[in-house]
Amino acid sequence: MPTYAYVCRACDHAFEIQQTFSEKPLTSCPKCSGELRKQFGTLGVSFKGSGFYRTDSQSAKSDSTSSSSSSD
Image (tube, rainbow, N blue to C red; front, side, top):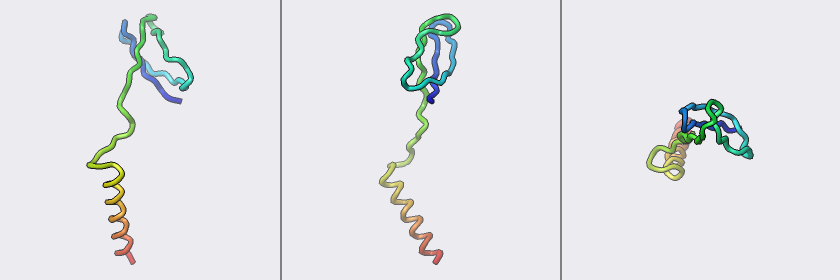
């Protein structure tokens, strides 16, 4: 179940809550009944390097091939 972060526009109260995908987003603050906005954070996945699949898989293949042939 995903966790969503909310911040109140009126009192700046920030909190997180677990909700299912089918639940409607919260609209009122539990402290002051003000308007809430959903807070979006960074992604959990980070792609680093010059390429993702093409260059990363090629270097991994050449490293594993050279190490397996040298161990025989």
